[in-house]
Image 1 (cartoon, rainbow, N blue to C red):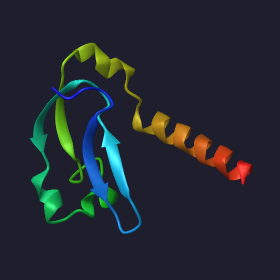
Image 2: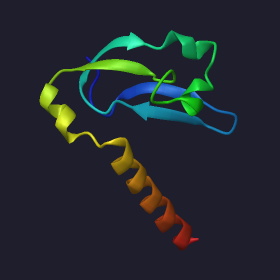
Image 3: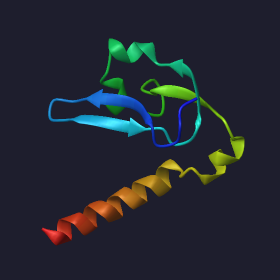
Image 4: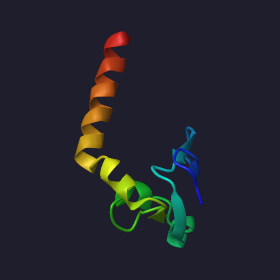
Length: 87
């Protein structure tokens, strides 16, 4: 069982490596093997063919605390704008 916040994936880019934390405690039940041949799918179709893993949550009620993609995007935009104004 993978703990919430533990390393779920490590994405290697030209500029940096990004550690993707697990959003909840659970078991990895599937890994998208096609990314080894076509890693660009993560950027091109992250909600379709570019998925990383499938998790089975240890506590299904944890799913209720997850953010929707639009809510997460709004938080990231706000954080980016705040960081830009500090420069």
